[in-house]
Length: 248
Image 1 (cartoon, rainbow, N blue to C red):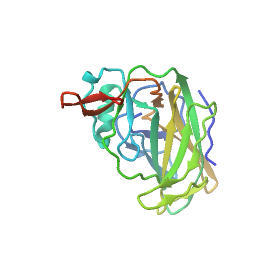
Image 2: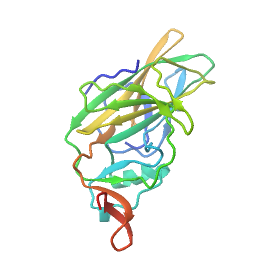
Image 3: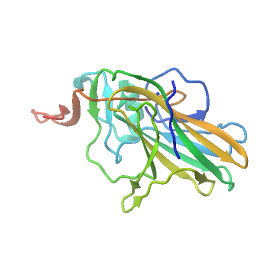
Image 4: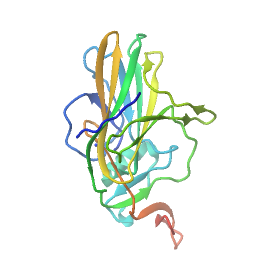
């Protein structure tokens, strides 16, 4: 099964082979494909951690007043917008991993590990909601992770597309050039400012290895929004478009 253990983690992400824990950092800027894998690695992958719920709903924590924060971007422009604002994923980070083999030979994805780099008090700032009305959900192979527990585990969960339920399936998965997989790891925290990353164990023809899934060599960064002022972009009392409190 997909399992997780604690160890000593925003933005679209890039994977890298296993390496030493990086220095914690802020949001990444865009998706990256593993174009220079270790010699002979039998699989390729790409990672996107700027995935909004149902393609539209996401919170960022920004240490600025509403008057200083520009209107929310479209999802595809979120990386540049978030980096410019010093934004941190609020409450939830979704990491989508696309994996396929480099030939017709099967590669088995054996396990997914959740590695916690640090957990601290929630980051300072306000929570800003990106949602402007949601579309349909698409979750190919979905896993949920609770970053608040001592030993976070990626647990398979039913997903759905526009017409069908996609039943949760435990590992191992087999991938090849003809049979890729798309995995969606949905991590949440209600308590901490958490920095974390993922590791995927694989095997093929007697060989084994581990790939590290992180944010351009840095941990992913997710913070709780509990108790924070929470804003969405709507029409204020004077009829202007602006950030307004959720309870207004």
